[in-house]
Length: 314
Length: 314
Image (cartoon, rainbow over all chains, first blue to last red; front, side, top):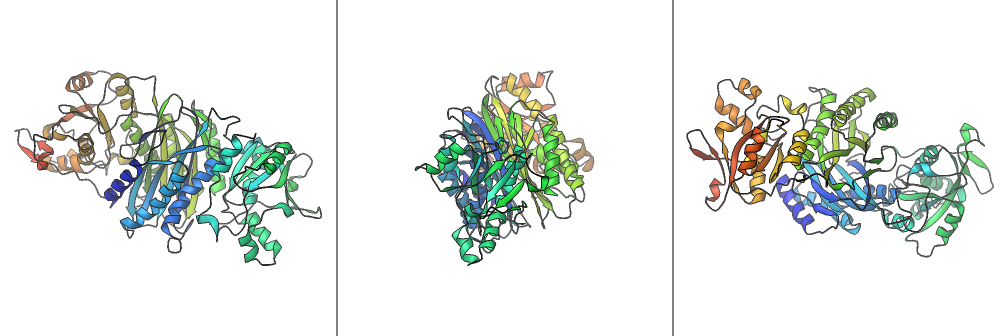
């Protein structure tokens, strides 16, 4: 099965051309040209029962997600996707068509985002399905102000912008979300971004990492948090439950960026933004606050409460 | 546990410097400089019960092997190792010290070979230990004749050279073999190599891939196959069983290169070779033979028999 699958994958990937690819699937390793800038590298591993349930979810969407979470990491760095390698531990019961469906979901999303699948490792075992994708992207030198967005560059007074909506993502969009690559590349070419990350574990967990790595405090504005229609519908009139889902549930795969107030204003007014962005709060100095108040939520009346970074436990 | 482990890994990796590394562990992705040449990318996934038995093998050597198999792929391309990302599915029962021992084995070998561990993904689950390493290396433009050794460049009349010894590797050296990186870099800087691969599945399987991809036939010389002392000891006086172990068992992680006869002679006489190399056969044209005889073994008396590419089934 492995051999037949590899032949299929080789023929699938050979028919796709990529300007950075020198040698693709079929040798001991792939050869790629990264001379136009610095290279961004990330990896994510997904496993049956932890990140997905193959009995309840289409294999194509599971494959898609394995690629999508990696693309989300590249978006968080404002890197242009280039290529990926894919490793699989396949359950013995899986047949070739199922593997093709799984990897077909990856290839489809890879095509959309200009990613060449250049290699991998396929194994069959008694255990459940495990998928690893390692992805690379480019920070093109020719593209000022350029990407390489880090978590530690936020400054006091900066505004926090997020893409899309939050909440209920584990039940709804986590398998078919759009990695925010187009938005990130649009922003990197036009605006100076101080810090960025993607929201995967939860809005509170991932934003708190920006605050922590930048040595700053952060306040979020309750009325500004963009809550998804799905979360609002699920929790009906319970605004508080819907808000908690947005703050803590995770799997949203949206982009968060931190910019100075003037840049934030220009971005929010930009008619060409590839998707909605919302201002959800700002960075503040730590020295004005006690340790307990480095991460707070401000409600519409101006009351504050401390936020705990927490998320969905797989 | 994941958080404490990541802090440990971050502090371990921060203390190590690498000339190509711009940003390491701790952000959404790593940033690496690959402008000096083309980049080689490979990945390997290892799982409990398939590639190792954690009850019978030290965790440090399991971690070492996960890194070593990837280094062996870079050696097969004559690429200088640069950086790696590591993904883990950790069994719930594993404690922090065990994870540190496992990853410590990777870090130790990574240090020896100049590899920076620049990121990864750590998960805990009910299943067995799964490790994925994705590695990158450089084909330095400044280094003629340069690497990027492929499988498909062999020519009729070329000689096949292999490093080290073969046989009994699953029982003996598979956890602590030396990836042939030093040998590959030595050879790439001094000799023109037509084709290369590393011997992982088995001598017959991996050499047959060179023949297949080069569109050639191949003959191996029985008396020349370097059989390991371990295999000879295990099979005592049974030369045939020891030979079969060398031809079919795999997990040897030696380097095979294909060069013209004059280059082969110079390499075999080279006093500075980092390890032993042996001539084991030659490439021949397919059109002189029938389909059944594209891959043959010649004994000391000149008798030939057809070889079947086969290896150890995990």
